[in-house]
Amino acid sequence: MLNNSFVTKSVGTLTLGEKLKKIRSDRRVSLGEISRVTRIPVKYLEYLDAGNYEKLPVDVYVKGFLRSYAEYLGIDEKILIRLYEKEKGIRKNLDKDKPKEKPRQPISVSYFAITPRLVIIILMALLLGGGLFYLYKEIGSFSDAPRLIVLSPENNSSISDNSVSIEGLTDSDAKIFINDQPIPVNDEGRFQETVTLQSGANPLNIKAINRFNKETLQVVTVQADYEPEIVPAGLEAAEDNRLQRAGVAIEISVSPDPVWLSVETDGNLVFSGTMPAGTSQSFNANEKITISSGRGNATFIKLNGRDIGALNDSPEAVRGITFTPTPTK
Image (cartoon, rainbow, N blue to C red; front, side):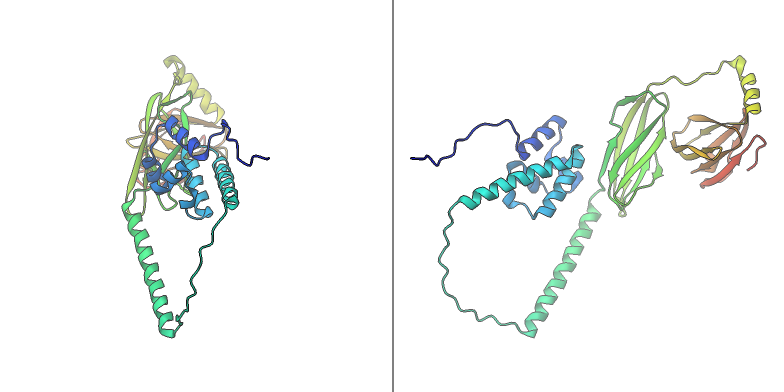
């Protein structure tokens, strides 16, 4: 006689819930923190951990949850979605094999009739429910701070360069500021900006502000381990003469606040980013250097070693100021 019972074997593959728990444990993050950033209700995160898929909403929402979950944890979203679909399919097949008893339904006679008055009542109820739902979402948006996920660089990381690229995610309607300088955000809520660093520790204040003026702040510290170039005092005059003969040499410094800058040399974009206050950078070109600045009166220029002061006297942004061997503004 054949034995129809199943033999259970232990396998090394982790379930979706076990995998999520392990990743959270390794990175020391809680369900509450993940819910706050991704806006996934905690109860749905708990259902994913426990494998209670029957308590989750329809698949299109669950897959959206898993994409946000994976994005926060920094892992491939396809892995989580594939595990979810596999485990849900297995459970569905097991449920099909179970015999189901159909309860006897009593014979009932319906006296329900659709009338114009009933149709009007249903439409009014739908309109009222839609209005209340919209109001609920608006109130929720008003009370919630915007999400802010800094993908790179990591806090307390070290680099051997004088600049770093900052990348991250926020709400599509939020504004991003790095060291109080506005940074563009695309329609998907992604942002990227290059920031010039001083040698040593550089705290980067990254702030997201939504349309209700709610804000989220993260401070990321980057250690820049590089030696600033030092020109011996006896060679400065000779270097200035050489640069004047070679073309255009400009040293740009910013003070007293960080300033966004764009620099083109001979028509090529060589720098676009935010320079911290008190720092400077040098650029060389054969024919011309074109500068755009977020604050003209906080951007100071030395042309071929000669100090010519601020770009202008205005605290507003200035664009397309060109310098040649014979300065023209």
